[in-house]
Amino acid sequence: MNSFHISRRDMLASVTLAVVTSHASSEVITELQSGDPGQRAEHLVFDTAVMKTMLSGNRASLEPRFPDFRERLLKEASSWVGKNRANNKEEISTLLRFFNLPFSNEKGPIPYCAAGISYVAAMVYARKAHPTGEITSATLSNFVAEVERYHFYPTPNVRGIQLVGEAKDNWVPAVNSEKKLAKPRPGWLVLFNWDGQNHVGVVENVLKDRLQTIEFNTSPEGVAGSQRQGGAIARRNRPYPSKYVRGFMAV
Image (cartoon, rainbow, N blue to C red):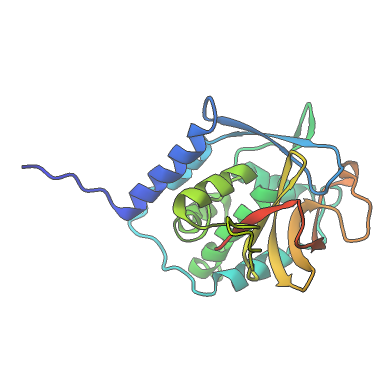
């Protein structure tokens, strides 16, 4: 009698792609994103076939999981703080091209909050494997599987991060079924929803009434958000608890 075997890596990759594509009429996902409440929505149109290609690579094995991934993620994200669309177009274009996305289209700039966090998460593993060499997009794509396998689904689509997290039991709602408030840790992802517009950041510190975060495609603290001035990578102070905080990815 023949037996059928599937590796845990292949199984989880299949779960990831099945969950994401099952919530869209095709493999193309559309999402409204914004870096702050009350701001003009930006439109993401993303083809999940890009992720299929990255997650079905030919590498023989994965890198070991980093026990200090959260600290490394915060360090990598912090290296981008202060950059913005206006003054760092090429660098932001590079992370968008990594997911086969343009810098802008007929509807305006392409949002990059989730794309940015996913990009730097893959960079964590790439820097370990290539500590002195140049890291190209082709090199970086080899390490998307580690992020997906061990931490979260790396994608420009905020909602996709949550959906796959729920399927893999890594999702922590801000308020659980017992009405208890989640206690996030530094390095966890925090997902926001501003009345229909999605956004994601990385928790840097947890204080009594707020979260200190690092966020891509937002506005610097104390500056009125205007995406026309170029979405920035900035540290933010977000009220918590808040109706806008949907939940967390425990990475």
